[in-house]
Length: 248
Image 1 (cartoon, rainbow, N blue to C red):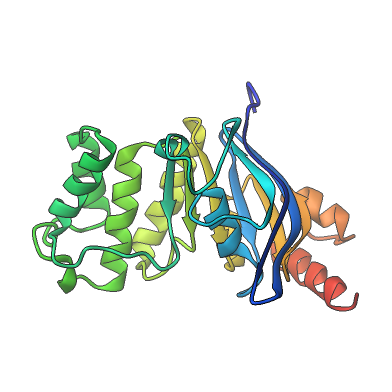
Image 2 (image 1 turned 45 degrees about the vertical axis):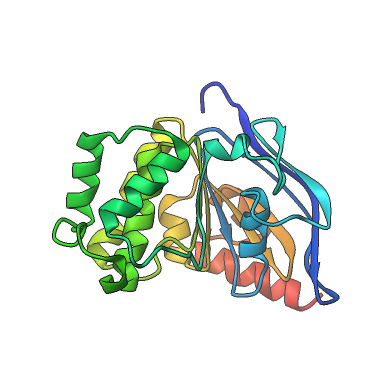
């Protein structure tokens, strides 16, 4: 990768809820143009991690830097460079899809790229629904609208928490190709998922998180070496990593 630039630096991140350790001093780095996949089972700490990196919640201890600026829930300037898709988003159901997008763009004070708008509208097949109230949208349609709102903002860092939820196969395929295109253009993507095939298809770097701990991080080749797996199957690597951790 040319001109390697660190976009996200996470150091010794710790978070607990109700006296339960959710993140146990995790650290990782993400560089410009990477598709960094945080992979792990439900309850591993993925969503908590990306919420902290996006500045939605505060860590109990540890530091997160985004483009060299320390992130927190109170710092809004750096958040202009972040597009965050939460796992359970709130969306204004009484607005039409078009009104929702216009509202988002007014908040960030940006102009709509209408060529890209029409392209995404066609690819996500929302043409016939964009002028309808969102309360009539399916879960998948809401997900596509939220993805459009992020892509059209053109942020430097995209943080996508389980982005395939509710999407049909065509939209899944398009999304995977689109984030690869963004990566090639120098955008940085942090993607949280439990889906092995998604991680295998798009990731330039993978961190496996389990029980609040980063077990391993690197390319698929790196992960296979770390866990002495002869194949480059992410499923084999992942199951081997989880098994070793469960036996500790």
